[in-house]
Every structure is written in structure tokens, then in C-alpha cells.
Length: 179
Image (tube, rainbow, N blue to C red; front, side, top):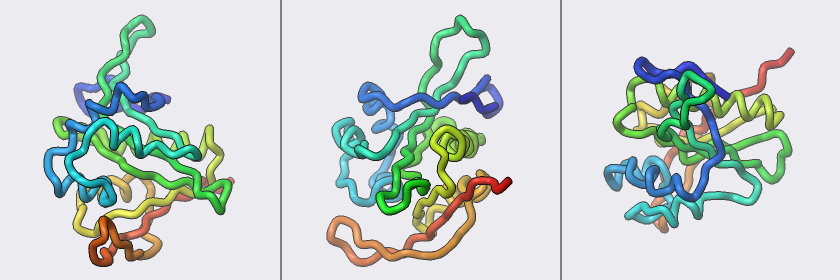
């Protein structure tokens, strides 16, 4: 799957996450606040073992990578990470989790293209009817990215992380095109 990417990036391609990608992804989290927004159940510091531990048996993890223009070119660097996990009670409902973009490429459209590619994967190859996620209301850049990619706010949820108080989160969902 290739998606036209930000200026200076030929295309963005999805591929399956590999454990060797984990150290790169771990470096993208620059603060405890970023880790909180990304994975509130994960204690700092983030490391490759914790990222590899996010992989669920009924899920698929992906990286977005810069894809060179020619068929003979080598694979470009990874620039984004995210997961599509199957909701156990619903066979055609996926959960988007742990979505992050290389900080050097944020606010350049890479996140939106990556989320769009994940939705195309979910609704195409994985035959999902719905993809859901939760996001902290204070995480404005992520919310704008998800809404632009086709998600809509469908509710609120309250969760407790790391033994702390209940936190308010927004539930966003995207739906397969009906045709």
C-alpha cells in the first residue's frame, strides 16, 4: 500500500512491524507527556521491549516508511508506527492503537497519510466495518489528524491508567464505506 506523502517524501508505504523497528520508534517519544498520550498504561522510560510487548495475538502492527519511486530502490526509513487490533467480541471491528509519527516529520501531513493508509488496510484487506480509538481531549494535534483522516467523535470514555484517577478520553470511530 502506497500513499502520496508530504513534500519531500515520494510515497508512504505500510509494512508489518518488525522487532528491529522498536528502537527507532522508542526514540520518537521525547517526553513523559508524549508517552502518556501515546500509551498511558506504559511506564516510562519507553524502550524496545515495551514496544514489542504492545503486540497483541489478535492484532497487526505496522510501520509507515518512505517508499522510493523506483522498483529497484531500497526501502526508505520508517516514519510512523501504529496497530490495528481485533475487538474480541466483534469480528469486523478493529482498534487503532499506539499511533505515532517521527517528530521530525510531524505537522507535515505524514500522520494523516499514515492513518489513511491504516484505514485503507482495515477496510480493504482486513475487511473491517469499523475502526475505533480513544484519545485524550488535550491531544489536539492527534484529534485533528484523526478527524481529517475520516474519524468522527462518537462518545467519551473514562479509564484509569497506572493506578491513577479516572481520565476522560474521546472515542473516535471510522466506518467502512457503504456501497
